[in-house]
Image (cartoon, rainbow, N blue to C red):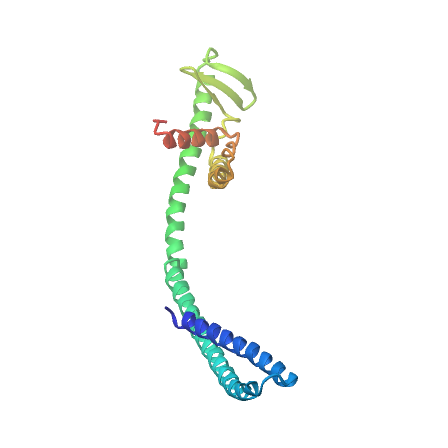
Length: 215
């Protein structure tokens, strides 16, 4: 039993003892006033002294509770400081900087790949046009060219897989995934992915991984 729990129990006992004595004294006082019993006068004097002692015990118990509460509060404050110290020292700006460096490296790779793909789409469109490969061209309007290779269409303006578009799609999917646990906890289905093709692909891969399928 903790010091505070024991002190509160002692205070409760002191309150109870004092209350019982007060009731007994009140009854004896009524008897004395009514002249019902000489014995009541003698008992009343005894109970007054006991009531005084009970009052002092109650005050002492209250002081003990105050000291125990102050000690517990101090211990909780020290524990709070220690908890903050441990957790925040594990999440220093330097550690966050390391994670940010890792993220920058990955983002840079995404941007390079996205821009390389977009450049390749444009380059091959120009090659097909220069070689007169009209059977591959599905649309031509100035610099906007849509062409086909092995059943796959490539669009020089609306492919949406350049670096900026990819970063937007990644953030949209990140936010969507963050909402999934909250919505499921509320008995709702996960939010629909963004309409961007990369967001759709990322969502499909995540669903396949969750279901143990090969995406």
